[in-house]
Amino acid sequence: MPIPVSIGIIGGMGPWVDPLLLEKLLVYQSALGMRRDQEAIPLLLAQWAPVVEDRTEYLDKLCRGEAGENPAYGVARALDLLARAGARVFGIPCNTFHAPAVFGVFEHEIQPWRERGVTVVHMIRATCERVVSQWPAVRRVGILSTNGTYLHRIYAQPLAETGIEPVTLAYEARAFSLEEQAARRDAILAGKLEPLQNDVHHAIANAEWGIKSGCDAARGYPQPRALLRRAAERLGELGAEVLILGCTEIPLALQTEDVPGLPMIDPLDVLAQELVEAWRRRFSPAWPAARELPFLPE
Image (cartoon, rainbow, N blue to C red):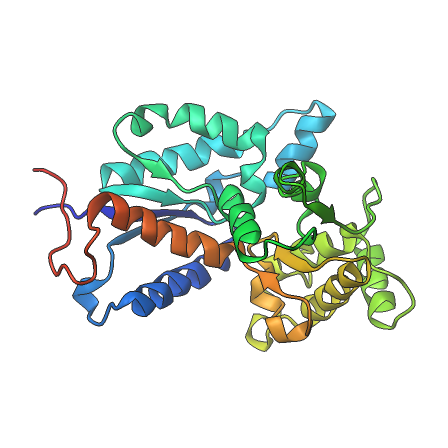
């Protein structure tokens, strides 16, 4: 049986995000004219969460000189599997994974596949380029993210290189107990505290009520949503003109209507569009008008 040339998604970082990206890919394809099942661009997903260490935790260990397996290795193994099955254009829906200490090792590991024509869309670069092109007059951009993305300046550095000032919340370099995290959340929502960068991270990663926990997913993550809304409002008060949702879990909770007047850019939207366009450019420029999808040589 011939193998179709596919888009590859290396997911599981975290698992709740993958269905959202798949939906965004289909929405964009539909906007371009896809109308039948058979016209959908082939896609392969590897949700290998058990073999990919938490990115922020790994970067913390790295900074402390402790041992830990670089998440790059598990993701490179997943790419190898999907590339053997026909994927040629890849996306990695995790902002923190793009830290140079991780992404650089990943690029080294997959070099043999790059030499064979595999392309990896760099979500961070694509998002920063979109900010510049969509809002050319903007000079201050707010960033909501995990602590790993914040500390390693994954968005702040490329934005600064384009002359844009990154706007972030204050950060405390210490660990907060689960009790402290919940107490701070409640105080912030009561208007008694201003949110820190740490609080944004807790809204994402707290094992009891954060987005990654999956708790209250059916109700739209009300506690993380309220905390993230206040954090976004605070960034606007600090002068942010546009807001980057710099963790792929954030769009599961925070919606555009939560912060009227502050435009938001979701890197998952950018990634979905760039994946489709990269696949089209390389393999089927006339898609979806071209009804025949490309296959690998047998």
